[in-house]
Image 1 (cartoon, rainbow, N blue to C red):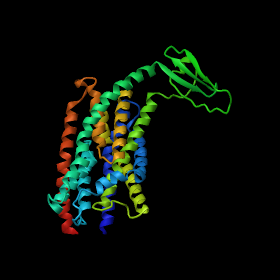
Image 2: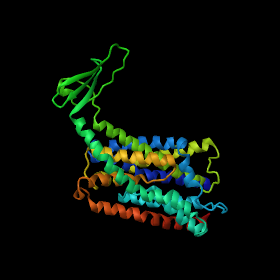
Image 3: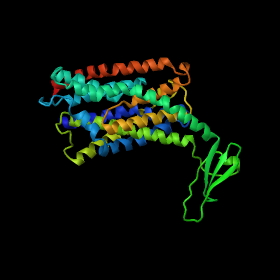
Image 4: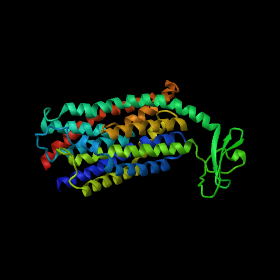
Length: 377
């Protein structure tokens, strides 16, 4: 089998493994706060993840460059078995973690594999350690603390807004062509009356029935759905280019030979991520939804907004962060706002242990894969 074909197939397999573990980071809050069930939440996250992964083909060149160039000394010839070994190490570890229900970072697994296989191929002098540490390791180490802090700041503000929202809703009535507010007692006040039929009116809220009015609801649940979709979109955009970049590993220009190849690779990654998310994402989702801390709508919304904003910001700068660490840290931070007893520390310890083990475990697996591949190829 041609090595480029083998590398592409391994990219698809790692994308599938990534989906089984990482879809949980955006949808666990939907299930944990009781907004919906596992099947619907996973389907929702799968769809938005695929859109994000496909979109990455056009907007994530900085992340592709970070992972495909500048990590290995430019005067070295890249062995043909290096990229397959890196992908293999990450695949085995992420699939193992998904099988055991542990949320781990595909990004950390890729870095561990890169270091392990790189040491086997070139020795310690072959990797550009300054670039590895500043552009990859440092952002990954800082991201959990940043997410923890942001969630602790964002959640009190959202809770204040939510408390006011509960006592007041805005209802847009197509039949009356009017915009009204309804307070907790069901009293209404007209804010806007359409002057003619050319002005479009949509529908909204929950306390409309209390005032004897009818309209569709746009409440915290709806915003929570949107935040979950945004987080899934951001996750797909963040992870897809890291995986796809393995096909360009060692390229001096980190550019795609053709637009057709670029679109093919990202389309394959998007589909494989979606397949892994839909058919294998439940186990890790259950851990984050039920075994870390109990959540209500506002807490889940806060965690998602924290995760999505940080992932999108770092992705635009080409700085790799772990969606796993951001999402998990945000959930833990929100749990701690209710007191340390609200957090299930046994689960948190298991998660932290998995995070710490990911890099060395993936490195060892990549070393083994490189050793075997060099004997076979």
